Amino acid sequence: MKKMNLFRFVAVAMCLLSFIPARSQQPEEATVIRNIFNEALTSYEAYHNLEKLCKTTAGRICGRPEAAEAVELTRQIMIGMHLDSVWLQPVMVKSWDRGEKEIARIVSGKFGTVAVPSCALGWAIGTGDPGLSARVVEVKSLQELKAKPRSEIEGRIVFFNQPMKQTNLGTFTSYGEAVWQRTSGPAEAGKLGAIGCVIRSMSIEIDDFPHTGITHYEDAVKPIPAIAISTKAAEILSSWLAVDKDLNFYFRTTCLAGPDVPSFNVIGELRGSESPNEIITVGGHLDAWDIAQGAHDDGGGCIQSIEVLRLFQKNGIRPKHTVRAVMFMDEEVAQRGGQQYASEASAKKEKQIAALESDRGVFQPKAMAVTGNAEQMKKYATWQPLFDPYDIKLISGGGGADVGPLKKFYPDILFMGIIPEDQRYFKLHHATTDTFDQVDRREMQMGAAGMATLIYLYDKFGL
Image 1 (tube, rainbow, N blue to C red):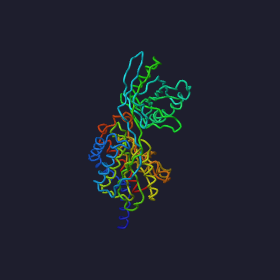
Image 2 (cartoon, rainbow, N blue to C red):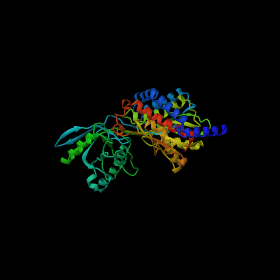
Image 3 (cartoon, rainbow, N blue to C red):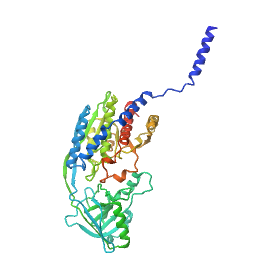
Image 4 (cartoon, one colour):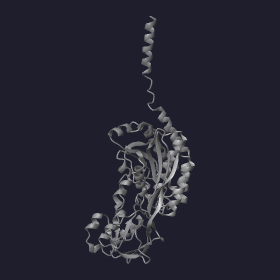
């Protein structure tokens, strides 16, 4: 009888236990991640570092003294963290000087003369001291330009006026559709005999802030001066042209390209406890256009990358693989920093297993992304519950201009990315408005914590 009672007791107990909610499959990871976010959200260290970077090295385009100052500042920040290693990686970069403040104005016999906000495109040639004045031909697509006979373009200034599309929900899509005007418009206009180019700024808003950015000439085409005007100025120029076909546009720039000069990528790392020669790279680009502080593009991405290492340190996380933060130089111009990093990693026979780049602004993170095969993405999806408390989705994607060259040497590398909210980004991108005061500390720190979490999980479990 006693044996029977014992049997019944065990059976009832097991039945009751079946109704107890299952224990979390990953309680340790959830706790670590909560600690990562808690530390990020209560710390001001990264925010103050970004302020220092923005306000003391504004205008740090590659080859300029401000870029050298940014190199030393970020090196000292990482030395002060007592990382396992901090060093400078030499890289030769192009140099360019904007020269004197640009002058631009619309001159119309019907409407009068109006000065317009403007800035020369990066690495454009200057007009020379007298400036340049000519009649204007407006085009809104490359097809429209190519359809025009040479006689309509030769000796004139081409005005590229394709707006960034407002109805796209993702502003990076709008930018991708319109940026050809800046990058290749001057070269295409030069092929048809144009003597200058005016580009509508790559901005999602109608305002008075011109946006700069690189333009690429072609060896077989004579380079022509190129300038960006604010979107509000572009609206005025277009509306005046509709009535006065004979109006002139005048602009003066004194920019000048210089020789290649030495610079550096700045690198700091936490060495892996088990596989130190297997590298997880996280980084942003240290250079920023000379008219801006470069807070969102990309000082914030650099500081977030450094913050990943600090969050590991603060939470006692010793990675199995080496986690390396890289401040890349020269993303805005020729991506030489990324190319140098990749080629040197290969020469040293490092094993680069994953790379995460932050270069989309430091707004509230919407998603973390990876590019993997079907099996990797299936495993990746199982991490979603760990990100749910922070309202961050796991999606496919990742990569970037600076980490992209790694693919040449490491075909199986896993690219990662952070996808922030992007509705405000192209109000600031490459403009004087990209300043420290446009950064929200909590948004930036949420992004840094999301990056640290993704790297923590990949380092521990792999994909």
